[in-house]
Length: 150
Image: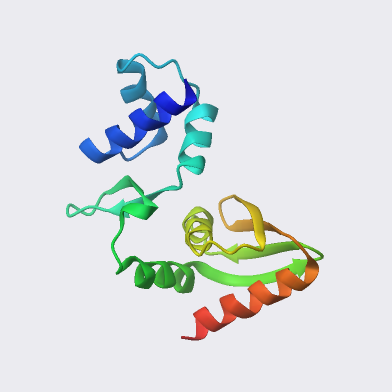
């Protein structure tokens, strides 16, 4: 069921400009899937969906991997524009962002496919990354600082 639902989500966001979780839930319900907000939120995270700007100045969900090679530059811009500060506590890396940007910065960090990162959780202005070791957390901080200064 989960695989069918997530496949349907990918199909829906490719065919429609879906802006919100509520809108995605409504589409899924019309397609015969009984979903909760938590399920949709989890699916969005697992599918690594992000919001991109449309021509009309609105936003829509898109698969991060659907972007072309120019995506690397966009990810760097997201990091540079959303980043405020970061600190490590043991194997936890906490990244502070501009309000509302934690999910976008988290998607950019996820897209970097850093093997040291086990997982991440984003709030409104804070991203928490669980890293394999304290040394790895410090190494990721170095990598991110380098990106910020480029």
